[in-house]
Length: 456
Image (cartoon, rainbow, N blue to C red; front, side, top):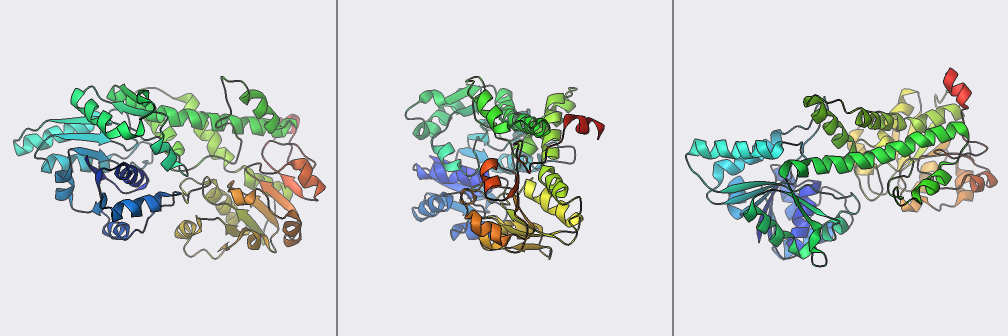
C-alpha cells in the first residue's frame, strides 16, 4: 500500500517507519525543510530506542521517504494520515490549526478518493471538523471526490514505541464507512496476525474520546499513588508495602501504581488538561480530572520541598547533583518534565546544579542555552563530585546499582533524595546515607505528623 503521513514528529516518524517496515511505500511530509533534509540523511530529531535503525533501513530500501512537497504528498496515496502536533492553549484546550491546515491541503489538491486518518491526539468532534474542511474545500473547487475521515488514535509509550506498534494491545478505529474499514483491515493486517480482534471499530467520537480516556485514567492512577505516598510520609507508613497490598488485587493490578515525583511528557499533562477543557466547553466540570492535574503539579515540587527541609530552608550557594532529566527513561523528552521544576526551584533559592542524563542533556541545553548555574556532566559519577546532595529524578537503569562507597566519598554531605524509590531505606541507612524518598519511612525520611500537617 501507499501511505502519506503529515507530520514528522514522534507519532509521525514511528508510524511511518513501522508501516514501511512491513513492506508499504510511505511518504512522510513536514514543513520544516531542515528536518526533512536531515531525515533523508538518517539524522533523527528524537530519541526512541531502535527507531533510527528502522528509519535508515527503510530509507535505504526506498520504502520510506521524506518531503516538503504538498502536491506530491496528496498525490502519493489514497491513505492520508494526519500526525501533526496539537499543542495546548492557555486554557488547556488543544490547538487544532495544524490539523485543519492539513485537511485544507488535502481538500485543495485531491483528485481521487482519499481515506483521511486522524492519528494526532485530538478533541472529540475533530473528525467532524476535518470532514467539514474537506467538504468546503471541494465545494470551492466545484469538484466531488469520495472521502472518509477516520479517528485512529495512537497508544505508544515513549521508550517502547516500536514494541507497542508492532504488537499492539488494540488498534482503535473510529468510522462507520465500510470502504474505510476494509482499508484499515488491510493496512493493519501485518500487526494482527495472531489476533484479529485487536482491531476495535467504533464511532468516530467514541474513538476520539477513548484516547483521552485512556491517558486520563493512567494519569489518575499515578496521581492517586502520589497522593497516597504523601499521606504515607505523614503517617510513617511504607508506600511500597501499600503498593504490593493493593496491586495484588487483580481488579487493581500493578501497572501505573508506582509513586514518584510527578508525571510529565507530551501526553498525560496535555491530554488531561484537554479533556478538562472539552468538558468545560460542554458545560461539565470535570472535578476528578482537575484534582489529578492539581496533584501532579504539586508532586513536581516534592523533591525540592524535601531538599529544603534537609538544609533548614537555606540552599544559598550550595551545589546539587541531579540524576535524570527526561520525564521517564528511554526518551530525551523534557516536555512537562519534573526535572525542570526542580532545577528552576533550586535556581530561585540561590543554588546551582550539576546534572546528568544518558540521552536528554542536549535537549536540556536547548531549554537553558545560556544558564551558567546549570552544568551538564558526562557521567553519573562525575556529576556528584563535590556536591551537597544527590537528587534522583528519572529511574534510568544505570542509576539502580551505583558504587555507594565511591558515591558517599564524592558528596560533601551523604544526602540522597530519591524521587523514584530506587533504593531500600534500611540499606542506605546502614551505608551511612541520609536517604529520603517518596512515601517510605526511615531514620532520615521527611516525615510530618498529621497533627503538624493540620496546623501548618
